[in-house]
Length: 354
Image (cartoon, rainbow, N blue to C red; front, side, top):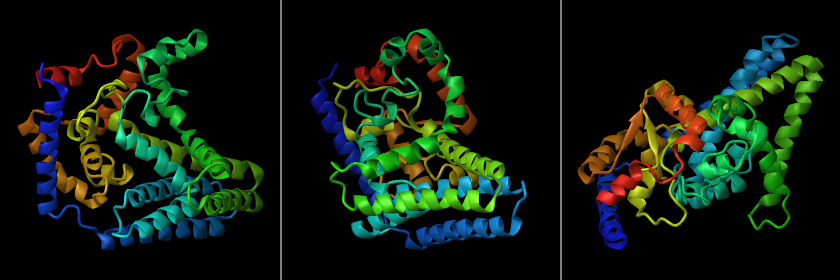
């Protein structure tokens, strides 16, 4: 087997070649009109839902608006994600404040908390003991975590794939709680922590107050429950296919940037509807290779990246939406059975052949 260092240097050079092709195609240029229009549509939809809320009054049709609100809040989450990656504007400050306002005031999420967590994920996707997205929790993503669970917890771990998507309906609550905790942390050195605390707490408290003041208790609770469930499910279902079920990289393994991002990421075939509901995250490979690339350019970059990976012999994984979910469920149900060695995967064989 070729030594790791020369191989990494070779692939680092090949990433540079790909990046140059992407720049020459103009795919890293900012698209302000696209993002201003997306922000305008999201804010307009948000306002329209609350106008409808006022007009409907004590009607169970309010639950349709609750579902719609969950979808719109998810879009604010996607926009905050894009701004945190500096996809919108040239100015780092403009991106940060846009993300802070969209995430805090409209989605009830802490920008600083999300950025810190998400940046760790981008630096080491699917890397054991590093990527927070595969850290132990309700779901076990690595064999050692699953094998350590016994009794009911162990029984659940071997069937966790079937519970994964129902559990996503609780993810909205989890994100709100994590955001509030992060902004309450006085030891945090994140800038504008107190402002984010005001934005997040005000947004969440006013929202709940409006529901219970203007609707009967049962209807208000149903509205809140549906909105949070739709929000959590939509956001989680957009992120889940990207890496779940792809190779887990051992904590001690060092990979060059090109292979580290491509070989543990999965694309989902896109169409306008999939692109909308996944916020462009269905082009996960391109997003990980070029995080600051505007969302609207990811689809255009796909052919360049795929052809480059084919020339370099790097697996470029892309499947349909429902197939991606089936792979996620199957992997989670069998992670403790089939993947005893987290590096016993196509990634290992590719590295052996390098």
